[in-house]
Image (cartoon, rainbow, N blue to C red; front, side, top):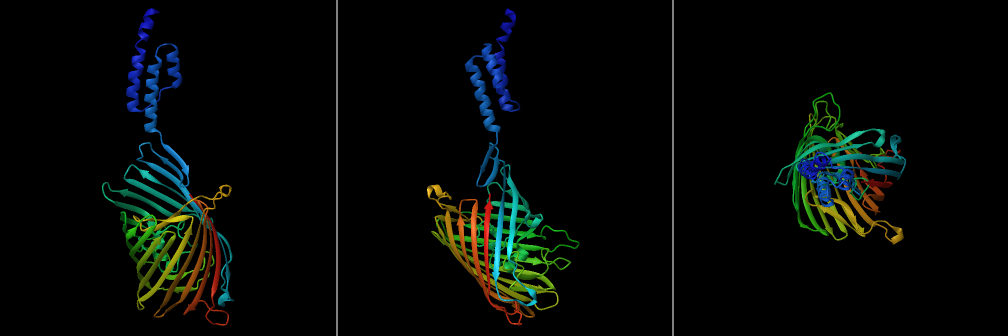
Length: 450
């Protein structure tokens, strides 16, 4: 028995040596219960057991992931910060009604409700240089893939190359998220940019700094099934902010997009043409131009934006040139200018991406403490001209007023009133065959993003 206890004296040395090598390899864990038993049996001293406990604690701090659930959704990050995973989404619940005279052809703006967007995404980093984003939309009782891309970030360079389905580098308004813009519907400029320069599958190179942004890319068509050779596209956008701080900004930029139609005559999977609806689900188009023999679209956009304290200003002017296989070339244009005033918050601007973001809020909605979130008032004037040559798609002017209530970083209530007027050319007609009078649209949205 005495011999046995003499042999047991070497156990503390063995355990300490094993624990040190095991901590380096980080393969298994030391049981706290086992340490307590060894101390109770006087095989280990309390100080020796404490050394092992501290070594185990340090090993766990190196290998355990950090989990955070907050306004940005679910975030999981490795202890070394090299890899991460984030899960989030957005919900946009809309309602709208129209007020207009009786229109020819039984045309009528659809009044009602809609789940405009119901998206879930997963994104993150793999090591320090790789990133990924996958986002799907379940609105309309169907599933559509929005983003599916893999990015590589070059070490020592402000350069990221991304491959997959993604936004093309055209227009400040398109690049900005629908979670962040101050209006429920984008401007009339979207009538000539969005059809062909929103998302497509391709490769982009993007870079940015404290006051500039650059992005360019080559694209095929979007995510869709087809039985003909795809069209091709190109996008380029650059911005510069000679004045930029938390509360002040002067932003100038420009973009250019090119899109060739596919062998079956589609452009980015869409029938060639340009139009704009009063709301996403209204099916009422004050302007609409179909171009059956379109071969190529080239769009140039100039952008100007500014911020001074609670005030923000944003504008774009776009010109689209259309090449046709048989008819003469066409040229269409659109512009918008918008201004917003934010109370109890500050609109954010990200210079490295050249776009405005969701505002920061001074105090989240909490009636018990007398906090009501932030309120934003916004106004926009826009115009679109789809009249050229033998194409009479119409002209329209519109003014939109918006009231936005930011309860916190995740919840926003929106109320918009838009007035479409000066409808000309091939725009809507009333039952008497005359150009339609003004069209009023009232819309609201409840938004959740995380």
